[in-house]
Image (cartoon, rainbow, N blue to C red; front, side, top):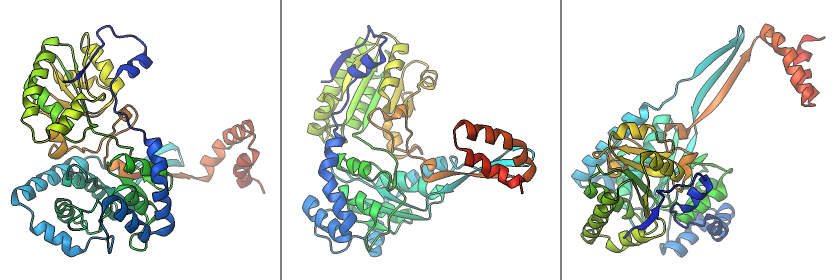
Length: 432
């Protein structure tokens, strides 16, 4: 079912390795030109343009963008008790982990009379996007809202696509917002939602930062408004890579590859292994398990697409080079001494260690965050965290003696850069 890439004779060229690794075809640049008119229309036309775009793309005619408070309360009251309990566990564990990420201000005395303090201040207002489409994601409400709240963000707006029958976001999304105490929720999806958050309307003020995953149109819109607002990342289709040796259980590996393929036909499932016998056993398990799943067509499309593959490697060292080059959103380590192997990984959004830490655990109830970099961006970017919602602000405080002591060095450097007024701004303080 999966494509095969044999890298047992692995070239030293990093460029060649990147070329051979499977990737989803996602042309954000082309999508940008298609969503640009929508984004521009919302910038100039406000709520009316959002309503028009929602009618055109989602087939829903909105009378108002904001979800009434009663709808949030009603969704929470109607929530299945088992789901309520599960969301409660997810929220509790997420708060525990994210609370440990808070950063304290640090003051460094550079010289007597001269200090630099690193302060951490939350963004004032954020817009959190919760996708709809092929699945419903109350878990994404948790993953976006909890770190923002822990960071101390004072104003939180959530937006999620409306359903055709109600004109509101999915009731599970509304219920999750209610459980988290978020009452500013908008029934808007797609590029128009990103533009609404960035530019504001009569109903909603602009935000400072937008976070949350979405489809290619959402990603393209986020790229267009970057700079007007901050964005967390350009999230593409979900990915799982599994680094496994002959000790891995093929049933576990197959089930985990399927779990992420279930998201989207463009989802990537990649097995990197040293063992041909494991490969054959996983393929047999995939055939058996896929046939028993609910979303057979979607999963089959994902597993057989060019973005998914089995990559054969000579040994674990070679496997680590491959997974570091791939930079998976989710990386499982199912090998002997899995913790030691996991500690050697340099590039991954999140690493799941050993047979009892599947990606699905992180999707919901591990306490970690599931909004993670995709498309190889884990080589340079991190997943959503409390830090995403904080800004580092430096406070510089020197007294007269400390400034006088360093003045010659400031003058020397300002002259070297042909910016003499910089030096004069210092020396002027010591001349009459």
